Image (cartoon, rainbow, N blue to C red):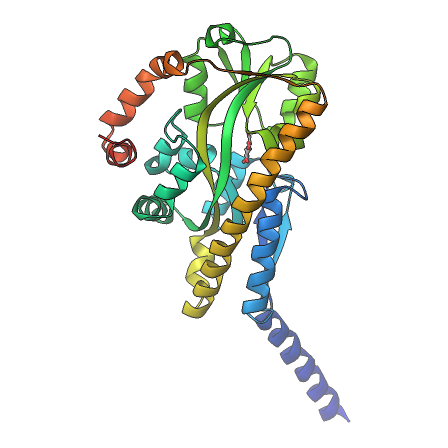
Amino acid sequence: MRTSIKGLLCLSIALSAGMSLAQTRLRAWNIHPDGYPVTEAMKSFAAEVAKTTQGKYQIGIFSNATLGDQPKAVQMLKAGEIDIAEFSSGPLSDAVPGIKVLNLPFLFTDSAHMFRHLDGKLGQRFAASLKAAGFVVLGWYDGGARSFYCASRTVTNVRELAGANIRVQQSEIYTEMVKLLNARPVALPYKDVLDGLQQGKIDCAENNMPSYESTGHYKVAKNVFVTNHVISPEALVVSTQLWSKLGQEEQAAFSAAGARSALLMRELWNKRVALALEVTAGQGVQFVKVKDTSSMIRRMSPLYDRYMKDPTTRQELLSIIPQ
Ligand code: BDP
């Protein structure tokens, strides 16, 4: 009798050990809500990984930045405290200076131009810099085209942004860009922007149209100054800690799922841009398109100069900007 109880206990210990070996739960950080292209693409990534690893990897997606704001999550992923995340290239480039050029204003003419580079040799170089810093890129997502929008002023000319308090991502290059427009950068976490606009703490913010719509910023800031000043990617990344624990076949499964999720994201993105424009225009948002970007580009010249002089970014810039 005693032996059989011991046997049963051993069996149950072995089973639970077996279970935990058979299933690994991973945490994925995401800033966006359900239904947003990033979230939906991450879900499809998680489902494909679970399927191709026969259920071994179960990825839980923690949306709406519930695990912390983006700069914090970038550090958490680097430290291996979270396993997977989808980051915008702004906060990511503060941790990985080699990818800084990706946020330079007016670098890419549109997403197609950007992905021609990212899906080629340049994307591999950026991925290598990211990997060396703790971030393994599994897919380049579309960060869209960012424009300014204001609650308290209509902007028809770049000069009219002067003196405005403009919310920026907590990222160096955005802060500098706004200063070069003679405006005041106010670094705020994404989730606090709506409040900031409502309370009058900020006059304007800048983002792509799907974010402008999904956050409800358009309900307060109804004047969009269409500049498309930054066209940049986002990245689905896993920590190098997780990556090094994966076997070769598993790495291949994660990579394939990441690449497929990126294609899905880009498709969903284009639809969502159109929807966001339709929804916001239907709610009385006024769009004023910048007439000539050259004066804005001229103001950015200290940024371009700096990146051309910096050996970590010069080569990348030269590859993107045709000589
Ligand atoms: C959105 C990006 C998100 C950024 C956010 C922001 O997808 O990663 O955190 O902008 O402006 O477009 O903070």
